[in-house]
Image (tube, rainbow, N blue to C red):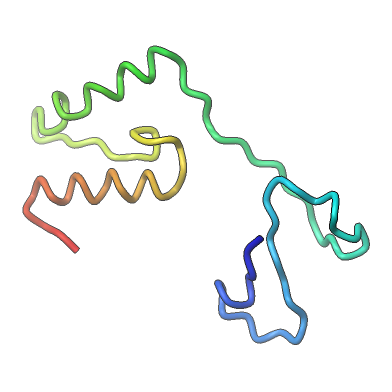
Length: 92
């Protein structure tokens, strides 16, 4: 569960939380909205393709970054983008 007041700097007297995957213990009257998300399910071919990242990046001055190089999460996209910046000698 994420406290959105803290994460988003909300100044509301009400505390807003986002809960993932478990709403059974939450009073239904307190739920503002339900959203269903899905992450990609990688095939065996996709898993094999991930192994080619180092080989294909840089060909014709083209680099690839995205969440698909990891497990499909936002953080994986950032991680792959940072790996590309390192190829240019740029780091954070």
